Image (tube, rainbow, N blue to C red):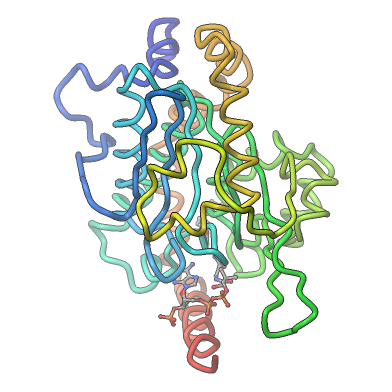
Length: 324
Ligand SMILES: CC/C=C\C/C=C\CCC/C=C/CC(=O)SCCNC(=O)CCNC(=O)[C@H](O)C(C)(C)COP(=O)(O)OP(=O)(O)OC[C@H]1O[C@@H](n2cnc3c(N)ncnc32)[C@H](O)[C@@H]1OP(=O)(O)O
């Protein structure tokens, strides 16, 4: 697998194993509205908008929809950049769908984990320039999605004095707060993003960072004030479906779009080659340990003590939501 040809194919949007019979890790071709895809061939920019209410949590189907949408956009040679965003103004993604982990089905659990691994392989190794537009919370695997992109722009949130309207999003790998640990490849992604010591602290404490702190440690590349702008000055907004059009008229997506334009102007071969330099080793190391990682995950999650923690956590989430 780790040959020059396999490496090049990974980053050119094709997987070396796809030329053979369907591989057990290949996500099935799914088409649904869990991820809304908007493509503007004139600018070379596309947008994938996560649309799984209430929290864009990552279920098996959501992971498959993300991979499918990304691959479909990648197959269009006119597209060079993609923006990853959310239809929920307050949540980018709440991370793994915790209900997948509670009293799991023996057959579905490894398929679920494989689908998450595939999101990492496809997104972190995409030939496209990827920009995360983080409008709301991005805990755990929500943070992982953002870290798998090339650039992260985060909204400062609504710091309105009215406490009811106030909303400050946070981002980070908070797994230890749930009594679980981020898998090695996810934790390593944090190390690669913010450096060893900051990551060591953040992983142990399960820190969720508000936008300014996230910027200061390099977890995001830019933050923008929460504000509406009069109108989009780019064509992509005009193409968006009505359900996200209003939301798109904001400074966050404008900024993400500007960054996507900057990437789209770089000669693609050079941009992709430079991405390979920093990412291929990490991706291939994960692929080599993929089955081991799945076994470890399934063994860990099905432990009695872990099940007890997770059940209590889901209960607490539901109670909190019911009290609103
Ligand atoms: C060495 C170790 C090797 C292997 C390890 C093995 C295994 C470990 C696996 C580790 C990987 C973990 C990665 C993860 O992603 S774990 C998931 C972590 N996610 C969270 O902790 C986020 C939980 N959610 C929240 O904190 C809040 O919901 C949030 C801040 C995102 C938004 O808050 P808000 O107040 O706006 O909304 P809520 O009312 O809380 O929620 C709205 C509804 O959404 C449901 N919800 C929220 N999050 C999830 C989720 N992650 N999964 C499923 N459902 C979720 C919530 O229940 C509400 O639903 P309703 O009750 O209204 O129906």
